[in-house]
Length: 346
Image (cartoon, rainbow, N blue to C red; front, side):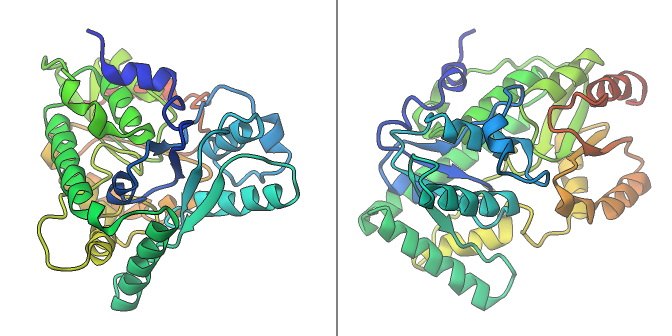
């Protein structure tokens, strides 16, 4: 069955090059992007394409997706995109923004104008006010009409509910779901999500993927090779990255969005008990095991690992811990996933 998102994954920049808004990193509010009235999407990445130009400038601490994005920027792939918004909620995205700006200032890089959305997600009133002000400032720079907020919020809430409902029915075809959720990150999913028809059969053994954002469906295919299916994902690009609906409120839109990000953000700088969060998602998805896969560049995630491991052990949930891994997963991770799914799941 042909799916609308497969075409988007094949040519993710087609709509963005028509005066679109690209973004990089976690927790860029969908309401802001929808209110712009322009095409939008996260800048795409490709795990298996060499990045010689980017490697000249980026230190080893930059993740593979950041290298891929900068390589495409050097190649002129983003010409035609009007603006790119970088998230301060993601360390790599924030640093990449500074590098792009410096390279452009030196005349070594062309392409879109850049904006840094200065999100402050510490759970206190001053951070809340700071984030709300940052959202308002970016909205002005993008030329957003204040009258566009109500419709944008309603559309974003509808998308949240749709994505969550689809994820709750996820029992098979893990790679297909990965394609859909990656396409929903790389594009305006409100334009095509209602056309999606997903298979409803049940594979049997279920596993949850957490940690770093995977490059594509290679981890999902490895799980299926072991007779299991990834039925939920907990990472910055995961199926529930947008959180629950904002709902109705008399607060200004920027404050509502800021409060929602503070409580439900998906990035590494959100203050959340990730062990409690992980156990809740295991319970809700019916997963029989967890794959905790983290790339070596995602150092912030490592601080939560001991608590997550302890919580899963106490709950009797089988765990495959793959830490300090290569982003391309060409270091034995895929074979380990297949073996875990075949031998360790009940």
